[in-house]
Amino acid sequence: MKPFPASAAGVQKYKTVVIADDSVVVRGLFARWLGESGQFHVVAVAGDGETAVAHAGRFKPDVMVLDLDMPGVDGATALPHILKESPYTGVLLATTLTERNTRIALECMTKGALDVVSKPDSRSGLTLSLDFRSEFLLKLGNIAQTRIRPGGLPPETDLDFASTGPASLRQLVSVVPRYLVIGASTGGPRAVAKVLFDIGDGLQDLTTIVVQHMPPLFTASFAEQIASYIGIPAREPFDGERLSRGTIYVAPGGRHLGIDRRLGHIVANISDAPPVRFCRPAVDVLFNDAARHLGPAALGLVLTGMGTDGTEGAGALRRAGAAVIAQDEQTSTIWGMPGSVVRAQQASSVIPLDDIGAAIRGLVRAWPQ
Image (spheres, rainbow, N blue to C red):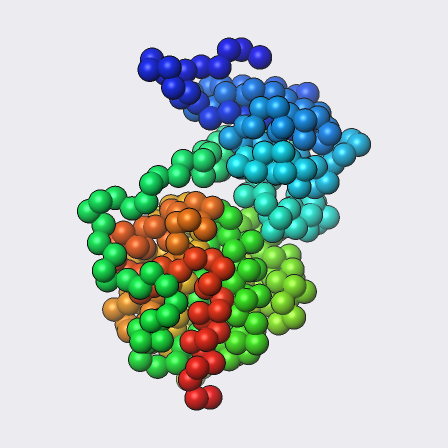
């Protein structure tokens, strides 16, 4: 490998990357893209999971690009060992998404992988797809930022407006919430599952709607995984479906999920409208609709994720009388989305991930039924 590039001050300027893929062509292509980006330095490559684990221990890279289908020890088997050797390495799954690989990738994302990018089926598609290259570099850049842990909020940020714990959450709502609307992105599958599991039987009193930034193939499998893990019905809704209490609805990948009121009932509104802040589905679409049709009966929750999706919608919820919870910085994989809500002073409460589910369950179950 080439010497590690450094800034003029001698501080490492680039994020270090290990590429684990059994294809020599793919490894070379990814390495070239990363070199041309000017942001990354490939310190090692691996053609199988066993070598990937060894490189994780030796190089402690900022990011590892991990294929699932490799000879011998595959990517899914190697993942926990990679994270054991290098706990602060962000793992991006890069694989061809068959139905089987989609399920495996989701399992990996609940066990520590941060995101996934779908490789085109053919070698020519991989080489020629500018969209794939852009998505690959964008997601890798997002994950690399998880290594940057700023020392708290900027000095000018005033948190007096927000509770920093669950204790006073009950005082922030005027009516019992009956709809839980959740937005998440990078690191979200694990966080969403954790929160829903911790809410437990409180979910029976809620209609839960989730926007998780995911490719189309993933969201149906994500809903199935949630249902299996929690024991509560979970699925992608169809357009116009009446939304029921005790059910979890997951936005279909690549389509917006909003809500509407038709004939006195709250129903799903599925849309192919343009992306909002580069996102489809977009949290802002769901939150704005919730503010319009539910008002204080909604409870907003913004979990880990890159970008600012959800901030505008959180403001709409607050103006409509609803409370909004933001995941705190210390427990967020990327404190982009929840951090943006906090900085915009639209968070009613800022709570660590481990406490969010219990706070919501207590809020819902503390009221007379």
